[in-house]
Image (cartoon, rainbow, N blue to C red; front, side, top):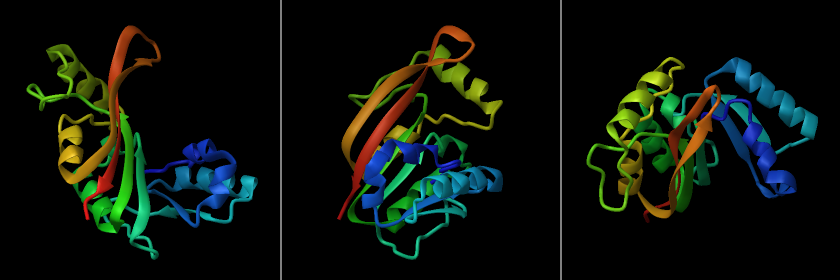
Length: 177
């Protein structure tokens, strides 16, 4: 969901052929055009780029095994609806995988990191210039909606900004039965 150019598909390597069907869902026709070229160049017959909204798209094969969001949830205005739609399309026990930018809540739940005021204030303003909106509610909502299988919080370098790192998370969760 929010698959853009489909660049992440390359990380599957030869294993991509083992997948029955993969949809690269995005609202941007120009990004999907690049995804389609990537699919054609690699001869993938099981990959289909599709122009659709992550808050409403349902694959014909639903329910599905896996839904992923890679740095796209922060660009979806109604991200709650996108997650709820992912829940609706996942089979019981299906898996969701997300990696994205975020900021913590001022008072996060036990076991979650608390970002300082500067981090919580600076990054939303910085990213908003590119219509990216890190939310303090991503991580708590995901933990509430799924059984976490894997969760990590990290910081990453940002081009052109020395010494400052932006927070991001990886989350893999299982849909409750």
